Amino acid sequence: MTPTRPRTVDEYIESAPAIAQPMLRELRAILKKAAPKATEAIKWGTPVFEDGRILFSFKAHKAHVNFMPTKPSLDPFMKDLSGYKTGKDTVQLPYGEPLPAALIRKIAAHRVKQVKAHDAHWRS
Image (cartoon, rainbow, N blue to C red):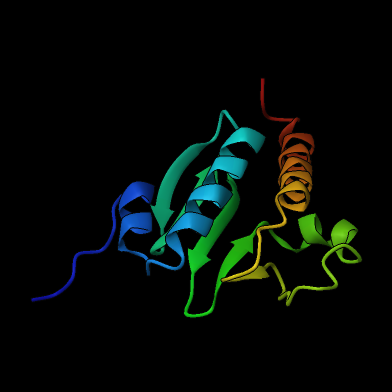
């Protein structure tokens, strides 16, 4: 029997490893507050927040959760992120460590502003 792929963010979190679930719920709550008008979806098997375009996404891995807000959104915060492993568009948030909630809020708010500013010419 093939496992079914999650179709909603709730299903995604429920199907994630038990160690990841509290962190995924907390991260989701932070992102919902940062982008209250955004809709949630599953794209490419990953939870995303969209508002005209993808704002950010997150994903559970074996030893960490990835927060993916795009490189331009991370660049202004690289000094603050020095204690975390980062990739081109990602921040790895290790299990067993507290989520840097205030920093995630700042990054998410910055991403929302970037998207609104960039897309302002076609939005009403």
